Length: 289
Image 1 (cartoon, helix red, strand yellow):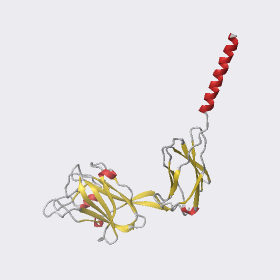
Image 2 (cartoon, helix red, strand yellow; image 1 turned 60 degrees about the vertical axis):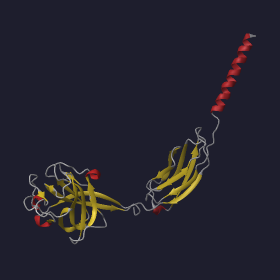
Image 3 (cartoon, helix red, strand yellow; image 1 turned 135 degrees about the vertical axis):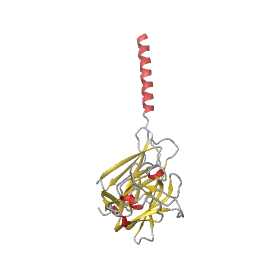
Image 4 (cartoon, one colour; image 1 turned 180 degrees about the vertical axis):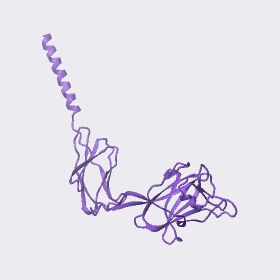
C-alpha cells in the first residue's frame, strides 16, 4: 500500500513538472513593428530604416535582411527591442532599389510577420583621399601683412628657420584694427594644404584663426576657421600642425592667415616660424567605381 502511494505521488509530481515545462516553453508570437519607413535624405550613401515598437512587450529583437550589392551577398542586421531604427551602410544610388525584410522575434524565438519595404539610396558622397605632402619653399617676396610692427619682428623672420627670431604685428603707434593677418603668394594655385606654426612664447598666440584663400590677392574667401577648442592649437613653442585644409572645387593662389583672437586677448600677435605644405589628394567617386 505504501509503495502504491509513493508511486502515485511521484507520478503526480512528474506530471506537475511536465505541465510547468510546457508552460515555460509556450510559444509567444511577437507583434509586428509599426510605421515602418525608410529615410535616405539625412545621410547620402546610407539608408536608415525606422519603426515604432508596440508596447505589449512581446518583441525581443528585430531582424532586417537584405541583399548587399557591394558585398554581393545577403546580409542580416539585428536591432534590440529598445532601438527604433537600423542603419544600412554603404548603399549606392547606382544599384537602384533595395528591398528590406523586417521581422520581429520574441523571447521564445518565434517570428512575427515579414514586412517588406523598398528604398533607393541617395548618391554616396565623393571621398578625398590624402597622400604625401611637400613643403612649399617660401621667399620673403611671397609674404605680406596688413600690420607689420615697425620696431621689431619683421615678417621675413617667419621663414628664416630660426625659432629664436619672430614676426610681430603692430602694437605701437597707429595700430590697425582687428584682424591682423599675413598672407602668402604661393605663385600657383593649390587645392589642399596644411601648415606648421611655432609660437614665439606664451603670449599673444593666435587661438582663433581664419584661413582664407584668393586668386587675385584682393578678394578672399573663408576656407576654414581654426580654434584651440576645435583643432587643438598649441599655446606653447611646440610646433603645431594644422589639419589638411582646402576644397577640391576651389584651388587658391593666395593663402591668408587672419587672426581673430589671441590667448591674451590682444589685437596683435607674434609667431616664430611658419611652414606651408601642399598635400596631394585623389578624389574617389563611389558611384563611379
